Amino acid sequence: MSTARTLPVWKSIDAPPGGWSVPDKAKSLDVAVVGAGIAGLTTALSLLREGRHVAVIEREGIGAGETLRTSAHLSNALDDRYYTLARQHGKDGARLAAASHAAAIDWIESLCRDGVHDCGFKRIPGYLFTHDGDVSVLQKELEAATEAGLEVAMIDAGARAPGMLGPMLRFEHQARIDISAYLRLLAHEVRDAGGVFVRAEVAGIEGGSPCRIALRGGGTISARTVVAATDVPVHDTNATYMKQAPYRSYVVAGAAPSDLADALFWDTGDPYHYIRRYRDEDGADWIIVGGEDHKTGQDDDPTAYARLHEWTLERFPDAGPFTHAWSGQIIEPIDGLAFIGADPDHDNVFLITGDSGNGLTHGTLGGLLVCDLVQGRDNPWAGLYDPARKPVRAAGEWVRENANAALQFRDWLRPAAIDRTDEIPLGSGAVLRRGVHRIAVYRSGDGELHAFNARCPHLGCVVHWSSEEKSWDCPCHGSRFEASTGAILNGPAGEPLGRMELKE
Ligand SMILES: Cc1cc2nc3c(=O)[nH]c(=O)nc-3n(C[C@H](O)[C@H](O)[C@H](O)COP(=O)(O)OP(=O)(O)OC[C@H]3O[C@@H](n4cnc5c(N)ncnc54)[C@H](O)[C@@H]3O)c2cc1C
Ligand code: FES
Image 1 (tube, helix red, strand yellow):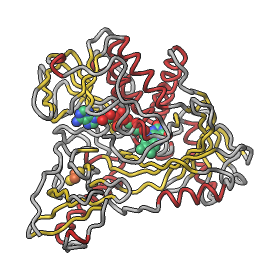
Image 2 (image 1 turned 45 degrees about the horizontal axis):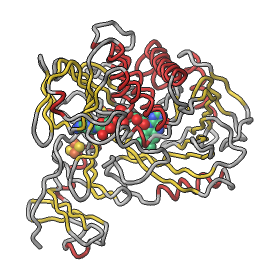
Image 3 (image 1 turned 180 degrees about the horizontal axis):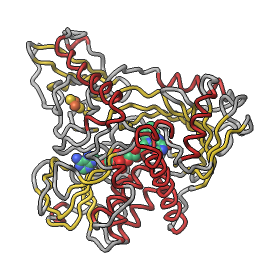
Image 4 (image 1 turned 135 degrees about the vertical axis):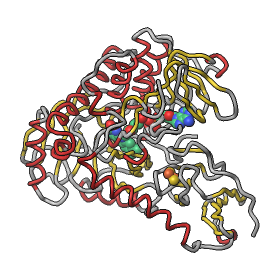
């Protein structure tokens, strides 16, 4: 069970090298890293290299969360723009952010260079172009990004990109990678350094000396240090969920047009679009195009992929055919930077969350930063990414996102769109009203009905049906649940949807 049904272009990785260990083999640990995405594996490898004994606890598979749903740009030209970051974190903060993401790309590059197999890593330029011809945004970003230390220039057309007639910003030293090959490399390195992979779902984490990890289905593991690298924390912490917002993001991939440059391209729209070229292990060239983001659980829109196709073909008529379409969850921190460091609610527990569209570099620098913190070393990035920080200069965004979440409770007052289960088509779901309850009902392909309490176990919003991923998605903070079992796909909910008996 991955976090979504749609299939990305990347190869899946079922098991870690050497296979899974059972939880009994890891009753008492030095460091437990929860989550085998890019953040968890980088953390595990960094701590193993320091001589620590580390186990990675993962409920599903290597990269089975959002990492294998990425488009795999590696960039320190951050999505949220340097003129915004400088306003929210000061010019020194913007410089530190740029340096930390650059360091993450360097770290990935050096691991790939020394690795046992090719991960398709290549340094390429990145181009930011306008979606509406407003060049003043580029000018502002040019000044702010230069001040933050990036090598960037305004160029006239020159690279094959949408909007290629207008000027663009060209950022040097960006990169791309085959994320599946890279995760396999990371997992090999973790195993070779003595790391252990445990297959289990964590149901709770309690800080202390030692920390206690409760496993779903029974059993506990204790560890001196726990790193929660589950994309969004699923244990009981209030540190971050009100400071970040969940978005669904869409991607399509197909045969690349021959004249598409090997570069990263993204526009200034909101939501924005991006393009990259990718050569797979068999030598096939792909165009990957993404965007059309919307808030999770809100504005369910099955036409997102069609719009991406149309947008691409308007610019590249010979692109395709498109063979892949998938979506994933992006967690947007309201001040543009991830939350990485000590969990203020639990002693000896560390968090890596708030990845945003730059989650591969956020996850990597997160691993390096948490390693320093666990080892008791100073790190210049620590204050910038501290999960306990108050994003005072992003107060407007904070109010907007939380007002939007609060507004979703109005669902409790609304009538249900349908009343009877026989109105639910095969392979679809709907929320029904029964007295004071809301019941989330899914009719699977064989006609069987699966009914759950539609109250999100996180803070009680009513979940919505996602027609595109066939899941139950919470419009408040983005928890997602599997249609026929109610199992957690994405946090912050720490409990699955409760089953309910269905009476017509
Ligand atoms: C469509 C899309 C495009 C993107 N494009 C880019 C890009 O081009 N560049 C970029 O830098 N970033 C990009 N991102 C963001 C980036 O891919 C993610 O932010 C990043 O991969 C997150 O990594 P992670 O390790 O933090 O989380 P994940 O990869 O989600 O890993 C978390 C792991 O924890 C496991 N887990 C969760 N709960 C539990 C539990 N209770 N017990 C045990 N295990 C658990 C999950 O199974 C999962 O394997 C994109 C994201 C999306 C969705
Ligand atoms: S995710 Fe917070 S109420 Fe559902």
